[in-house]
Image (cartoon, rainbow, N blue to C red; front, side, top):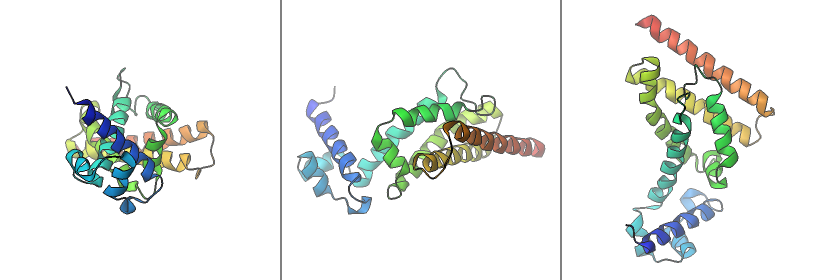
Length: 194
């Protein structure tokens, strides 16, 4: 069982990071600022995390794990080719319900490196599913998943930040069409080469 003090300290550090990340650029954040905000000493910080980057990466893992669970959730209709729009519907619900900080991380220019880490982690987690679902080798599965995840999350970023003047229905239609046609073309090409 984890010590309650450890849990409280970890929660305080994560809350401090969430607050300060929205006030400072990542490279401007200091351990001293975080520990002051969390009301702990510097040594305690280093008992929990190796660096600020390590603390930030804990959010990457948390967000990626939630996205993976969402995209692979049963029923097993996580297949974007045979169930067009399922990813959109699930991601739209995620962004509607996600803590403001998740949306901030996934849409912030200064914290975009964390968004890239989330995309990579999600793509890696989905690759095995695509190998099975589409009969792809590991390389092609990674390419297909990376294409879908990167495009989908990038387009959500544009939409959420108001860079696309579309209704939700029109936005959904475009994402589904782009992903579906891209995947269909890719799979047809891969099968043709076999």
